[in-house]
Image 1 (cartoon, rainbow, N blue to C red):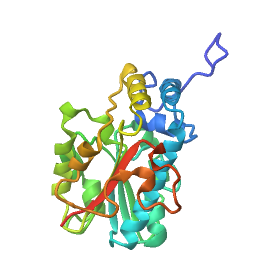
Image 2 (cartoon, helix red, strand yellow):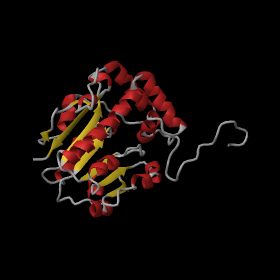
Image 3 (cartoon, rainbow, N blue to C red):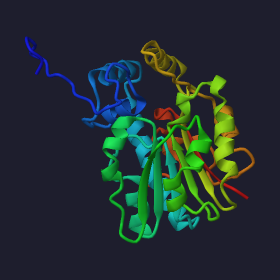
Image 4 (cartoon, helix red, strand yellow):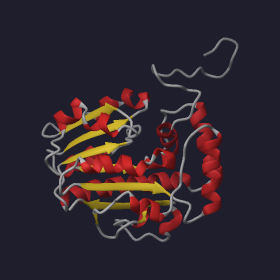
Length: 273
């Protein structure tokens, strides 16, 4: 408690700037987590004011991750994953879903927020037959990810990999050329690998999404909502798995969805020929 103040003092791990919002911590706030700070909650609430269904959308995004992990292991034979833009652990994590089906599955998580590193031990609770690793890196520098020793020790890039980019590409502006970053990652993967993406869009409700983007950018963040066409570009010439690029809630749902466009994300999975 700060002297002369009734409000608790926020304490952050080394390297964490509690005065600047971060997408991983905002997402944690939407999902009901506690690993966020006042600045994250303020931006998170402003975005909820713009999009009242924001918490629902965050949960639908997580459900997609679970379905992708399940189907890539069961139907595509994927036994290793590279998850970039991991965020703060929210159980079940990708490796828990995948290893629940095939215990030998190996997963490498990547994020650039120091607070995620603090929780890396939770991410690393792998099944004894598999492996779970975490590396601190940024998607803006694909080479630093692909050449990382921990990744090379955990994943065999000669065997198919499930590359998951969940709600991360929105943090790169068009000037960053996120399409080239994804292409560099994909080029390093062998035939049979799969790419899974979710990306927010203004296609379903421009007014709400544009207001949410304004709230984020007004707080100093980069947040880009993209059209279906722009999202499809990320998959290049890879073979789209059914049902193609679709609303996130409509990608192989476990149960019928009343209104797939209630969650403003495009989602898709493709396989490398």
